[in-house]
Image (cartoon, rainbow, N blue to C red):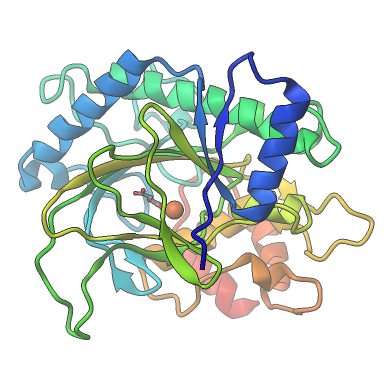
Length: 357
Ligand SMILES: O=C(O)CCC(=O)C(=O)O
Ligand SMILES: [Fe+2]
C-alpha cells in the first residue's frame, strides 16, 4: 500500500487565496492533517517558547506538583492523564485564555475564572520569563488559528463574518498544552509498550501543533494503518477537530491520532487547541444536517470530567448523530439550563447531570 503524503501548504503571499482555500479544504476532507509553512510566527518566539518548556519540565517533580490540575481546575500540570482509560506516558502543562481575557490580571482573580478553571503558571522567581514568553506564543497561535479557520470556512462557502468564526475570533476558549514525553523502556501489564497518548480525536475546531524536530512519534490512522507525520522543519502541523467536523456536516474530518513512546529519545510537543466559546452551539451548515447541534461548553466539560475520573463514558461527536438518539441530547439541555461558564465546573455536578438525564 502506498503511504499517503500529508500535504505541506505554504501560507505565504506567493500562494493565491483560492488555491489555499482549495488545498486546505482538500486536506481537511481527505486527511484531517496537514503542515503549514510561512505561517507568520516568528522563529525566535518559537525557540524562546521551546526553551521555556525545557526549563519547566526540568523543574523538580515536587515543584511542578504545586501547580497540579484537579477536579475543580482543568488547567495546570499533570502526569496522570487517562486517554480512553489508559495512563499516558507523558507530563504536560495546560494553560488557557483567562476569564477576563487579560494576561495581566492575577491568575486566580475571580474575574479570571471560567469553565476550565484558572491558570497555574510558575511564579516569576521560579522561571522569570515563562509567563511573558508563553502568553506571547499563545496569542500568536490564536492569530494563526484565525487565519486558517477563515480559509477552512471559505472551503465550505462561508467567510470570516460567519457566526462560528466570529465567536472563535472574539471569544475562543482555547488552551495550549505543553507536552514532555520521557524516554520509555517499560512494558505495560498487557505486554504493550505504553503510549505517549492513546488514539483520540481533538475535540475543538482546529489544533496548531508544534512538533519535536528530533523525535517523530505522532501517528495518524489512515487507510487502515498508523502513519507517522514527520515534521517539516519550521512548519506547524495542523489538524481538524470535532467541532469543525460537526460544523461542516462531516465534510472536514477530525482524524484519529496517537503518540507512541520512544526508547531512546525524549520528546517535546505543544498542541494549541483552538476552541469555540463555551456557549457556542455548533450546528451543521446544511439543509440536511447529520448531527444535532453541540454545545461546546457541554462537550468540553464532559470530556474533561472523563479524562480525570472514570465517568464510565467518553463523549464523542457520534453521540450527536441525528439517527443516534443519544442521552447526551437531553443532558446537554439540562446542562445548558444550569451552566455558568464563569464558574469552574465540578466533576460531581456533571456526574449528577449525567445521571439525571
Ligand atoms: O504530541 C503530539 O504530537 C500530539 C499530542 C496530541 O495529540 C494531543 O495532546 O491531543
Ligand atoms: Fe491530539
